[in-house]
Structure formats: structure tokens, C-alpha cells
View: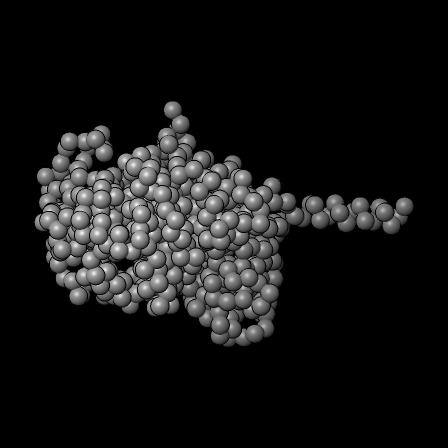
Length: 546
């Protein structure tokens, strides 16, 4: 009886000193996998040291700079493999996963354990969110900061956690891109999918083909108005802009320091009007066109039967690969209108020569050639799910989309449209999938179509996918298509706060998600965004469904 009573008292003590995950008041987005909250505090002051090994030095300097933003005294970094009482210590733990970390704050100090720089970086992002809101922006610096005691064990659900920015439609510039990268890093998102070319603009310098930017980066007007796709209104103002290769290198380096891989998207064979406006011989119709001023699918597509066009595309890819170290290169491949190929005598002759029965087979054949070229350079192709020959558009004749061609097995399928069974078929066929179903992840959709709660509830793994294929879904992405974001403020409104919901979709296991807890934690981020001049959509809008 006495022994049982002592055990009972110990249990009461544990419950008194720690709160369970459901009760915790730690506001971190994305929600960590395991959290135990204590009732004590740890104080960072002028006596506190940052203890780092050589491998964690980069993260230690980042923390030092962060503390300097809000504190009077500069916290010193000490090189040591030993834990020093009252310090913030970065420690090596080889048992942690590639992006996993452990963060523990006790009365004695702070420890961040990881197996590499990415893990330490993510542990630091969680630590930063435990500081008072606005700590690094306050005009009045403090002498000390109190943090709650907590133990966090964390690692992501998915390895691919992406945000896409379309700059073909509206060029935003490197400062906005850097702002987005900063917010992605805080939210532990690791892929910036950069849609740089499309019908309405070419935004990347290609030295071998200067007209791509001299002509293709400019349009004389832009479709605007509340009716959007059906609007007859034009801005009557030119729009232009592109990134030099030096600017691309600068942004790639900026992203890399934040553990973000930039995956460039170079559309082919459709959405190619800006390039064709620069070099008319690229097009199937071989006619001079202007960069389109209306949104939607453009007036021509690449002539994939022409060896000169293939040479052009590989030349472009060579320069792109020279700028982006990403192992994955996105080639688009969506919304190719086959009527251009059907009405071309040279394309029809090419199809007959190659034994291709339908335009879909021609697209898969062409796409495999591009995949083979990328593989020869040590890269991997990614494309929207039409590249499999899927019929997901009512503007295509069903007979044109039949295909017996087998898409290269190494391809990453970016699923965005069509019946979910198509994603299941791809996964069961052995393809890796990034699930970005448009009806749940497209940020150009208004909040009535995708309220914050719907964004948060999205599960990248289809409900009826056989569990043995779950590992083929490597992650998810949210897409900021650019047709209707003419200003930075419009973009901010569409992206924030939904990007935080998608970050949690990609990182947090389903069993650990809770929408009400997420909304509470979101308030801190919204305050941060306001301080940064990011114009987030207000709470009165984000869950409005009528």
C-alpha cells in the first residue's frame, strides 16, 4: 500500500509539472511531432553562451545574430563538444533523421540536437518561435529573455514541402522572392518551385538566346478586371521584367542558406508563346506572334518534330542547370493543345515516321527524350500529370489522349488535376508523386473556394491509396499562380496565412494536427507578418465559405 501510494504521488508530480500535447501552450507552426511542456523558465542574458561544435557553427551564428536583434548584449559563441551549464548548446546526434531535431529547454540551459546542419537549422526555427512576438523587430532592446521549459522531438512527415511562385504572369523581383524564402524557412518548407516561363512572359536570362528576354519578357498590356478569365478589360500598360543570371545565382545562394532547394520550371512543349514570340521558328505554326496580353493557353506550342527546336530546348536546359543545382528540373507539360500538331503536315509526318498514333503519344515520346537528356546530366525530370498521357481537359478529343507510350520511370509526377484514381495509378506504377491537387492547394483560388480550414485539412496521400504505395507520395506543394496578383499586396493576401496551413500539411503527422491549436499559434505569425509589411488576409475572410 505504501509503495503504491508513493507511485501515485510521483505520477501526480509528473502531471503537475508537465502538460500533455493537447494542453500545451507552445505556439510553433508547423506543429512538432512530440512536445512536453514544463512549468519552469530559462533566462537568456549577458552571461549566456552559445556552445557549438564546428559542424553546427553556421546555425550558432544565425542564433547569435537573431539574439543580437533584440538584446543589448552580444551573446558569445564558444567552441566545445561539452555542455556548459546555463548555455545554448548545439550537439551532434547521429540517430536523428536528415531533417529531424530535438530541442530541450530546461532550467539549466537549451540543447538542440541534430545529425546535420539542416536539423540544427530547423531546431533553431522552432526555438525562434518561442521568443516573445516581435522580439527581433522591437526598437527597444532587452537585457534578458525568459523562455518556457519544453522538450520537442521532431521530424517531417514528407521530404518535399513546396511553395510555387509564378512570375511569368507578373514579375515580382528578388526582394519579394527573398521575403517568401524567409517565411518558408521559418515554416520549414524546403522547396521553392519557381515558374519562370509561360505564355505571358519569359523571366530568365538565357545568354545563347538573348531575344527570350529582349522580346519574351515584355508584353504591351495585360488582361485585368473582376471578370478575370472572361474580362474584356486591358490594363493599357506594358509589363516587363526578368532575372539576370547573376541575380538567379544570388537568389539560389540565399535559398540554400535557408535549406531551400529552388526547382526551376521551364514549360515545354506548351505554354511557350513568349519564347515563340522571340523566335517564331520554335512554333508549330511558324508564324510571328506577340507575347499574349490575355491569360489562358497561348496561340501556339513548340514544334517538337523540328531538330532545331530540340536543340534550343537542350541549350536552354544547359544554362538552367548551370544556375540551379537542384537534382529535379520541372518541365511543365500541362495544357498542350493538340490541334496545332494535328494541323501540321511536318508534325504528322514525324509521328508516322516514329510510329506514334496520337498527339498524346507524341508528347510522351518528346518528354522521354527530354528526360533522357536530363538524366545524362545527372538530373531528374518532373512534370504536371498530363505528361503521362492523362486526359484531364475537356478541350482535348478523347481519342487524341490515348497513349501506349510509357513515360520514363524516373519522372516525378506533379499531380494537379483529374480523378484521384490517376494519382493512384501513377503511384502503383512506381512513380514518385508530389500531390498538389488544384482544388485544395491553388493559392490563386479565393478563400470561398479554399478557406484556411480546407487548406489545413488537405492530405497529400489519397484516402483510397493502398498503404504499400504511401511512400510514393513524396510530398506536396501549394501554388501561387500569377494571373490575378498584379501587385505585391494581392499576392500577400492570397498566400498569407494559407502558406502556414500548407507548411503544417507537409510537416506534421495527421494525428498531431489540430486546427484550433493551429489558429491560436497563427496569431503570432500574423503579428510577425504585420511587422514585416506583409498584408495577410484577415481572419474575417480566411474561413468565409458563403
